[in-house]
Image (cartoon, rainbow, N blue to C red; front, side, top):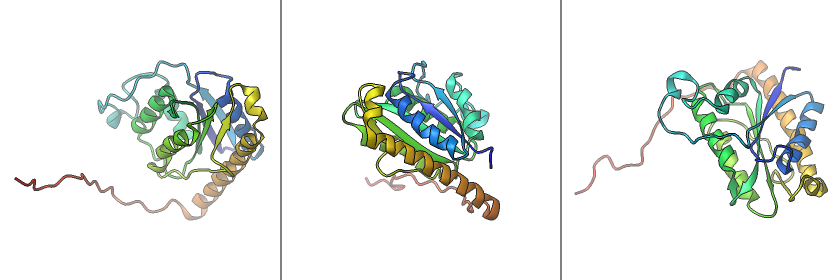
Length: 213
């Protein structure tokens, strides 16, 4: 299982800032536990939001040819996805939100049983709301979510502040170990049992089919 790997996406506008400090701590534990990592920084990329044009449904790539199309094959080849962002107005950065919207929507490959994890960095507040936002990408895609002893957040205004957040850094280390264990366990399970049976999707529109007068 030496070929197991995690794609890490850093959505912070600061390449070596607080978010990167937290992600690096997780990556160290993943590597130490036999899971390779690749980090892609997209924090200053000019990323547009989804246009709902439908191009991706037949092309497995986005009509907007930017970093999202570079990430799609990396995501497909990965056993897990680790996403980090700074908190902007109690939510994920606009950049990482646009990237995640289009990355998940434009990629048509099977994502179930890839392990997902989110890491959030903030000076003071908004971490839990941002954490919830990012986890929704995983749970709608049948991706198991790796967790830690606490919600996956660090606090600080500078990387040195984050390093002094001993609880936050411990949370990152435990996340790395737990994510590696989950990835390795799923790989063993797939070898022995295969993937769970799929059902044909059912679509329900919450509209009255017989409008009242």
